[in-house]
Length: 126
Image (cartoon, rainbow, N blue to C red; front, side, top):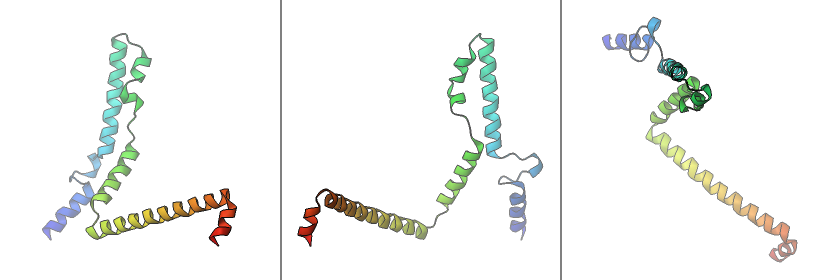
């Protein structure tokens, strides 16, 4: 029972047990970090007499951090790692079936293309 209460407190406060009031998600922290880094880069550039165009070519500006994308990616990774062996087997068998069907479709399309090019050959097949 005591263990359940601790789990409930952790669930309410986030994954690390911090209170929700002061809690920030990893994505929020990363977003703030990259925002501060950009401001520092610009300030250093201005202080050294550099041009703003040079700073805008920096990888930090070219590849902006996307918190929403990171959150979705993390959720997908969690789902991936929580798969059971049965689910893995089902996915593998479905993938194998899909490949076989794709091969059959390509084979039939090839035959149809050949028939379109040479319709007289179709008469010989009958």
